[in-house]
Image (cartoon, rainbow, N blue to C red; front, side, top):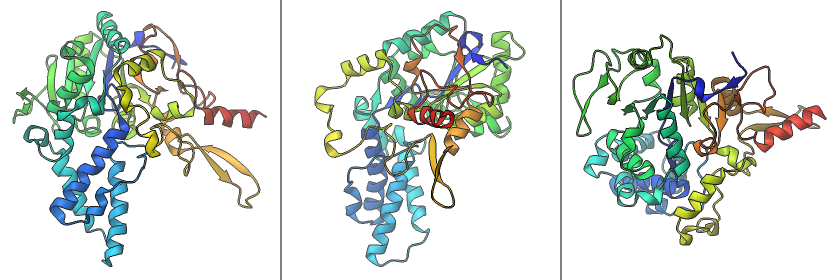
Length: 392
């Protein structure tokens, strides 16, 4: 395998949506997710109203799940304060809260608190893509690449997001759109377990398709049927596909292991470790974010989303003490090992490469290269320091 990777060598360029093409205003969104779960527990399950009072806190790593992890911790504290036995029974209520807010009909029915809030004020939670990203997508289409969108979000929520971040003509950018993909099962399950379905007014047709024979917008689906269509569309018996995503579990690992795709991981934590944001992203965010919002969360004691944890340290490097406790050694975290093993390269956002030519050659991750190789535009500070300490 070549030590370099280039988009110009790919026949198909695919994208996840949430936290990949679409970047969220994380502090606003994390608070909304927490409140969506909590209001269900308070209003439907008679939990203490004190849970609704949220002290400044940053939700690290998985932005959709970890607000719920914080709530679980606070529920345990509440149960102990009441003198109740603490067991796993409350988890059934948490699952009910998640389903109440995120089930596939919640968006259409205005159920729960999450979707109604985002629909009412999408700009508060969703960051529009910069013009450089939109131009980049169009340039790939003009270069004859097949563009693919695969998201586990339902079709109606996908439509809202893309209208907000890409504009009303966004469907023209993609040859194939797949919603409610239920990753990682999209890659790992056989066609009979997860057939593609057509959509009528964002409602899935009940009959699964025996195969996928033309481009368009589909729901659910599976990798083998998509692979057959991509062979037909590209005229290549083994089309080269690259997929951009933010999740190791849903995007990188299954696309790499089952699809044998190239994978580019979005790692926002790079921005908290010295990796600069692109000039286009900085300029665009300064233009679109209202002045009165800037500094709002910092005044409440909340850190920037990508900042390293003061308690846990770097996302990329762990510090270990020797058994005697006299010396310290630095090792890559499990997350960092996984990025190097299942990703072709890592970037902080799609904006960071949108201004580059399609034939730009990126150094790829390799077990034969230093652990700093494979990050663009540069490695995180903690990895640079690790390499420096090993060479000194």
